[in-house]
Image: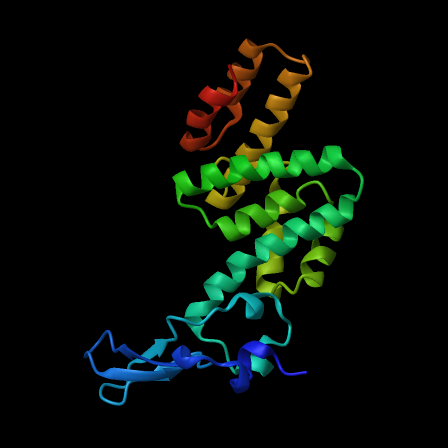
Length: 221
């Protein structure tokens, strides 16, 4: 069965349109299923600004269906991978809702810290979601969702360093550590396992990023 989005019989009047070349201003004609087009005047190659790459981000047959994906798209494809990892993590834990809540809570902290520190959120969130699954399970999940081998190696390397994190560890590893630490201390406070003063002291001693320390002021009080 042909994908309806790529079948011309479903196309409407806006399926063919023109875009001005950002380099020279020449009109470039696009069909809605073109991934890229080259300007006939200056040879600049432009990514289709109206194309929805959503299905290609997840589909293992994306390259066969759409041709070679443009280099500019690979960043968004990696970014969308974190959503697949989040779903796979929930399937892994099944009815272990405690572990699911722990991962999603840490992920919220990781996203806020990552945005403030300028970290790679795609990698950061994948690591946080997989933090409690174990290294071998994490690797299996990443293979399952179609992550590239270099990305799998990067994520697993960060997961493997979390138990003994050095002060000069990469930014991504430090952000993951701080997000997990914030989640753990919040949970300990909620359960009455530690006092607020103790939590605040531990945060100042154990957090690696300034963004996490700032967030902790509101979270731990």
